[in-house]
Image (tube, rainbow over all chains, first blue to last red; front, top):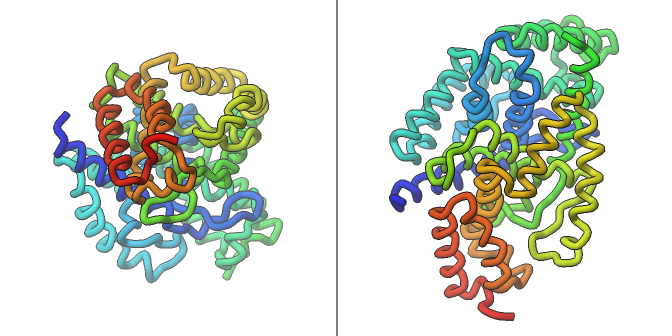
Length: 198
Length: 198
């Protein structure tokens, strides 16, 4: 064992631990507390495995799962940006690139490059794995929110067009799941949990 | 899409959410709060990907990662059993088998069998993936505890023999990581964080 290499790997692994303290806007099912990045990524990775039959394209499972597991790591420095926070979204890219340099830079070079590539692919919808992982990134909070009578949408007072815009990208990874997602959104508009227009 | 099949998959995925509320004895780095099952599994799966070069045998990455992601799912019904709780350990097997029947039974049959197999393999150290995933199951809390000056060991007043017994199985998945783990344990005995003998 090359101990220096191993120590670098461990330093990155310990850094990852901080994702457990980064809260998202989504609440756990059963009207629970807010979810954190690690929990969200865990859920997404399991969904990739369980729902892979609905992916538009064939995917490398391990690659897609690892992509999901680390896709939010930059939030350790850059914080979580809510999908409907327009101010935050304007500076998100720059803040996240800087964070990626520092955090992936903890790893040995070969793994730094591998994880950075996974992260960039995800950001850019560049591969089948990225497209399907991003579908899960959209669909996972939708499922939780559906189980909570749309509580997160009500809190943030988002309208149908905003939600549909976000979920447009779901079909790039899975047409079938995107269609189901649109039905769920429709249901919550009818129930008054999502406003039709602002 | 077979909607009935999809609904079963979603029911299982929503059931998984409950793992985020099952607390372990391990505390997060930085002397943080207690970790939950979902966070632990997320951390383990990322470690499988990052540390695979140290596995004794070649492993199928996606299989080992999924095994890690769901290995604690039975605790939704059976609760977490601390590694050094001897009373709890005596009834653990029975409680967990019953939970596995119910929880994996939510899935369509093919996936019920697939996940049940992953779970049983993990329990029985039956495959290279199971042996390496179990090494990570041991090593992940050791890393956190090391970062917290052995706080969890001090709280539970465990001695060297107990910890070494637990970590004996680490070498079945990775001799190199097991050796490193033993050095860490040694360090904490010397620092007085682990008692030499009870």
